[in-house]
Image (tube, rainbow, N blue to C red):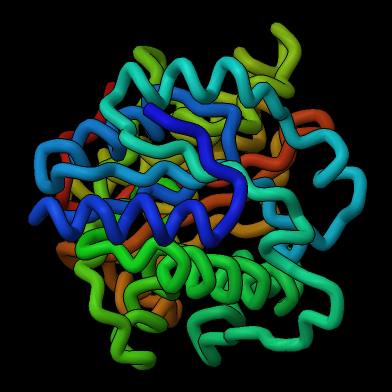
Length: 286
């Protein structure tokens, strides 16, 4: 694996791979790699010959300066893990390489960016996500790109921007990877102290309670969500949102049907976490 810092270097490496007849994959990350990221890289390696992993903590998607400052960073560790998972290139540009002086262009996916994370974090968040992902896709020019289901709204927005902008890339959304106790793997988990780490499982337990209610025949979304809210309340967690929505439009739904997205965001101490499940696509966890 090689580490590259500039778009010119990346494009030269990709061009050489294409000359060899290789298919190109892109796995965008902000570092602090965990098994969820590594599963994306291994999946990319299954599909493609040349795997580009980007490592860039994108300042444009942070609406709180402290969150950007606190975001965990360890490039040496990340490089070692990416190489072990089959990465061909680690693309780790400086901020000025991605956003040069005078940068004034942004990408925004209307509608899908507004609810849930958009309401909680502001429109700037997904504008920053959509812009940097569009740039990374243009920089690496992959045949396929791989993202995780844990960031369900982000994944939906990326699918839409690829479709709307006619970008020549296949997007694959891979399942959320969880710890044995159910906690969704996230780079932010590294910021939790021991007490917070234990308490963080409350989010997944609340989601699984909704799954169990649905599996037991409950079809009213509010009734099923109440089962999850009871668990959250017991642990003193008051979510920013805990919602049942259509997985394609993110519109609230009143009835639980196969494919309903149950999404949650909450702070555990000072650490903000998100998670989701799609009703009917996995077995509820006891």
